Length: 171
Image (cartoon, rainbow, N blue to C red):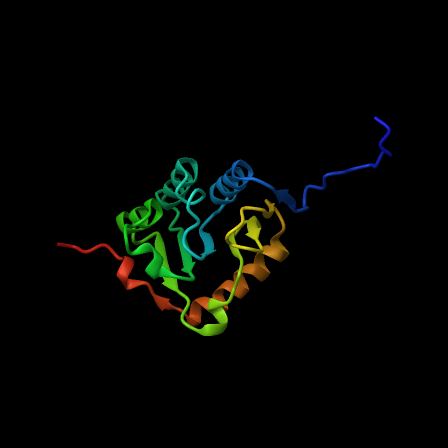
């Protein structure tokens, strides 16, 4: 084809590009299903199209009902954007409150965060530098990077407030 040949090797412990919604869904499902007991999700508004995708919701439900005592921590930039009608992930979290914890960032520096990510406790992640775009990168076994993402998440989680307005009302 007249193109210079370049040797390309895919290493087992390398991040790979996520270019479209199908790749983001597949990577997210893989990260969720390979989690042992912990998931950390940081999002502005639960990313319509991604976290309400049926495959992702099935994977989250499977994680939550696996009987391993796992918990998914969800950190939102703007819980108010979800009050008009709870997205399917919030409805799932309301049905399984012991498996999901939702908080909203509460300080100005944390609100300026532009990205989004999903991380598990097995070293997998999906990271998007700009939350409003689906493009990013993912990995299934990069525990060092996943640990750094979780540490950054936990720092903000401690400063955040519970999103009590998204809890189910027991009437």
